[in-house]
Image 1 (cartoon, rainbow over the protein chains, first blue to last red):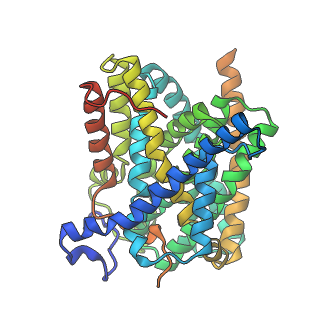
Image 2 (cartoon, chains in turn green, red):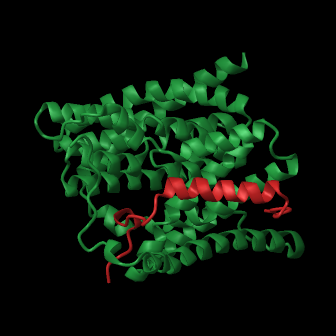
Length: 364
Length: 40
């Protein structure tokens, strides 16, 4: 067998008819939209109270409200399994938002910033993979757990780990530990990155690039960028998608490595493997950008598409909060988290330096 | 009841494909002025 897909759990709903599976999405999806819209509603209410009644309501962006509401609900109550299927659709809304935000980039910007991102990503990849492998050895983590942490921190978090799980035949416990570590670090980044960005007086472009390069999970990178501003959010998405495009190459590298040691399946059709692992939504993002550049949409239509992407991100932001369970993260053990934290601090510092030099060079 | 963890749940459809289809459908509706304006 040339490639392997992640096996579904035995109790999966695959045996159920499609209409029942789609119906099962409704409660969780409604919760995502409810929390997301509530975040937007609170921001609007706050603006109204401050401007009309001069009430000192906290000036907090809808992004943070959606995350905080999600975190509060997800951690205060144990949500019934009824919501499980629908909550997983946060991935769909996130990807829809990313595809639509392609309308805000003309192809020239996409090539310039995307090209810059690709160069920075290549450097970041080599450094983060090396450092994570080194830290894994120092802290005596299981080799495949170290591989998963390295893949997750260098590319795109949970998606990369899930893609690698089948390719390197890792154990279920290693996968869940690596995912928990990456999600913990993503949760920390949500609050740490904007604070650092403001402290360093970073511009929207520099901060967006830095976030896209350093924050692991696509959802968290999008949110961390958006928390700093609209432009930073868009640049973060661009840098993150450039990083995500490397997923196939890195996972293939690890699959070949573990297969050479007799601990994973051999990959026979490497081109097919790369295509299967490539995040296809990036093609949609580029296609919308090409249409926007070609003048297919008027200026007001482009504004509408940009606004639509914001509406699509709302349930995705809510999903980031709802799926972050602090108790579960704490119970994963300290060593993988410590390795992740040390690796991420290194990565954040290095990518900050890279962005500083890249943007300084660009403005000269 | 099991705590909810979307990471353990796999969607019954391919999110990439569906996201692209929805985006293009919405793009077409906006282009044809069937959706005249989306505000924020």
